[in-house]
Amino acid sequence: MAFNEFRAEVPQTELDELRRRLDATRWPDQLPGVEWSYGVELGRLHEVVDGWRTSYDWRRFEDGLNTYPQYLTEIDGQQVHFVHVRQGGMPLLLMHGWPGAGSDFLDLIEPLEQDFDLVIPTMPGFGFSGPTTATGWGVQRIAKAWVTLMEQLGYDRYGVHGYDWGGRIAPALARLVPERIIGLHLDGFLAFPKGEELTEAEEKRLGGFDRWQSERSGYAAIQGSRPQTLAYALVDSPVGQLAWNLEWYDDYGHRIGAIGNDKILDSVTLTWLTRTAGSSGRIYREGQDSWSAEVEYCPVPTGLAVFPGDSTVRKLVEREFNVVHHTEFDRGGHFAALEAPDLVIRDLQDFFGKL
Image (tube, rainbow, N blue to C red; front, top):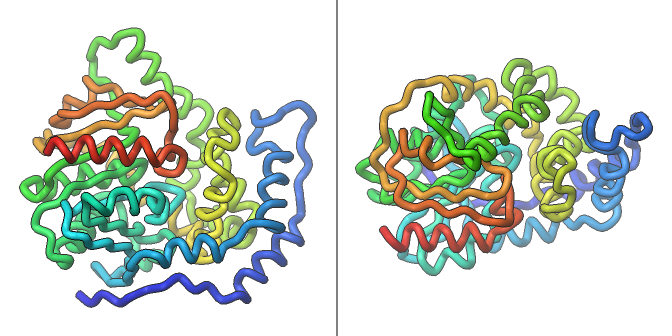
């Protein structure tokens, strides 16, 4: 397997084209008084787009990413982009979710590189890994790809961390090669009840999934069934793509600005420039079977980080995993590495320090 050094160097013409499209946006109307109840609120979107047009600096983000060694390789016929910081510590594989890329973990690298060798890949279909070129890139196939990546980098034993889709791929990887995994750390993991008695607090925590089903699951239904139809709009309209992603970053209007606008725009601009809004959404179709598949108990020592809004109930997770570490935080949210990186850093250090 060949590893080719990579630097992010987007041509200025691409940035100029983005600015032209932002300036030419055709805005929809909005009903009076509905705020976020019908979707992303018009005033909030105007605010973020104005910042995108007038003050956002892609080169700042690009320079930050280029601070660290990056590579391109091919695994199972698919291009993969990854950051690899080798300092001689415990190898740690960090896995991101949707929407995003390995760059979601940029704020974690410097504090963690003293203790860990960091491998941070971007999933096929996302960011600089580029669009997928074949069907089948679901949870199992990505997990196998990351096993191959770690083998080729020379790591026989390593820790893994994941959130969102990374939080589904990380357990699949641990079940594939449990003898190689030092520890499995999950952020916001969801396990469903199977007749267990729950306390009032546990019922309340699990209620977050009920809210997801009733209010927030439309995006997943579309991406899980007709991602190609949606892709035409997202890849053609930067404001459309921003709105589609902003709904999640702003927690459907419940926590507006919890993640800074520049961090939101780093992710959105990366997706726009790499034309991966459509291909990244395909994981919801490719990975559908991971939600219904019966899984074996995973003996790997497992740590859980639980942030406000997460639906993680420890006793339910213990049915599937060897939970040895559990931390509940009073701040942060679904995108904890972007919103509260200090807490993620501390929990990774605490969990793997025990192992």
